[in-house]
Length: 333
Ligand SMILES: C[S@@+](CC[C@H](N)C(=O)[O-])C[C@H]1O[C@@H](n2cnc3c(N)ncnc32)[C@H](O)[C@@H]1O
Image (cartoon, rainbow, N blue to C red; front, side, top):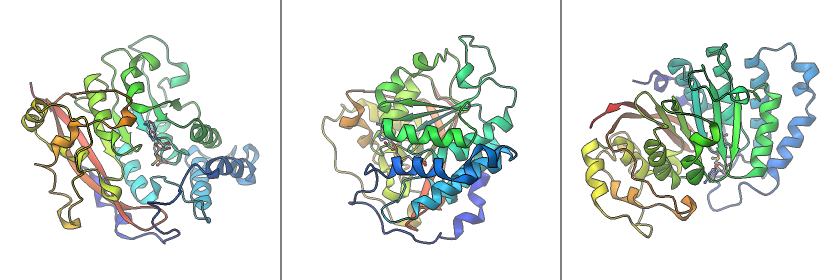
């Protein structure tokens, strides 16, 4: 289903620049503001130096600069990185999505990596800054949701340097309530929906947020979901939802909603990752964390996904990780 998984890049661990960051401060201590200052100070990213470069080369310079910054002491950045990122880029080129949604912008590394292909794939489409209310117009664009205004500001700065500010629209706020209103916010009348969704924000929110997107018809047959960090730290509940059959999902919805967090199912041994969760902890998806801010959702259990993992690595700690790619192949009523 997904050719990108055959990439050789994923077979070689990148060098280790940082110890695993869980349990330590690894963001929000000023490093994101410092990154923006740093990017704006680099001569090789200035207009004078990049005006003759192709979009790919210009954006690659920004990605390289972000990655280099993240190698410094107390500068770890929770970006998708290049081993997973390049495979997602290959998927973007293969699937040719027009409308892409990202949950979790952070400093914009993934946004730059993926959105830079949209303009080449769809040069004549209309991008978010010029969308009108006409549902029939040929729209393309990369919508990225970010809770932190500070991180969004850094990301917008990077998008501008990369030449992608007209392609990417950052929406700030908490994902779950914002997704409920996203059609209105973006003026996306039905039947418009996203062709691709990259989930990379707070891990316990993946399940509730995908259910909201399903209910709102913002994902559906043809949509490709890509969820980062399904090995590190792992996300058994989300995997069980996208790997379950409609029958399993319908059955899970007969159980009452959980009002407190259930014990989290531990990650399985590495050799079982591909096969685990097909009959997994789906009951955990009956719980929505506090960060969902009161949003509840049952999803659309009739949607059928074909789901598999793309292996890769954390870009700085050398820990094994993966993205789950779930193609929505249809709907069973
Ligand atoms: C792992 S980082 C995203 C990395 C980025 N996608 C990349 O690869 O460059 C997770 C981001 O999700 C954001 N986030 C956390 N909870 C959120 C929520 N409820 N809604 C939107 N964004 C959230 C965090 O502020 C953080 O910037």
